[in-house]
Length: 214
Image 1 (tube, helix red, strand yellow):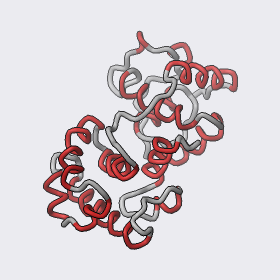
Image 2 (cartoon, helix red, strand yellow):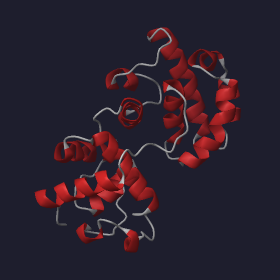
Image 3 (cartoon, one colour):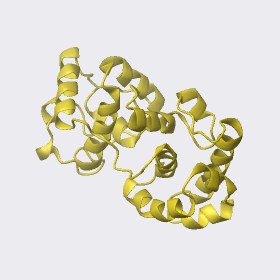
Image 4 (spheres, helix red, strand yellow):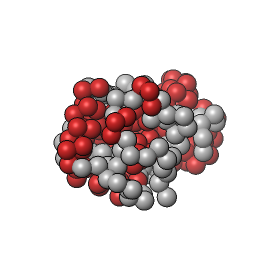
């Protein structure tokens, strides 16, 4: 499969930055605590579903302290319509207690520290830092993976390898580009029946295969 040239990469980057200027997450949150919880819940789940669940969750547990004092069963009951709710309830409870015990009740703000928390991998940590601090990171979910492969920006087999390639070729504006590719994959370059007639980079598309990370 043919990869995008340097000229094509520059063109793709410029078009995305124009088309999705100041792109932000569709998750609804008020602070860093709420954002972290939202992102943890959004793994393999839609933002729309997360936004339905979190109002009652945050009304019951408005901060990290109250979440740490909750029981797993209480958390589970409030998020039971979310995918993998059993594992996520356990991770949320453990994460909250780690923050209280290891970080004096303050959500950590570095990639390494965030990744030390239960249920927080590199993608989750990067998304939190991207959205809250506009940090120059790339995070690769299924949308970013699929669309970047269709455009020939990467043919890496894993999400993390794709993240490295995209970070290397784009260099800057990664926080905006990450969310831009998410929105592009969610609404235009969809896995099934992509809206090619409405695509602003259709002329640069290499393959319509539904690429998935291994």
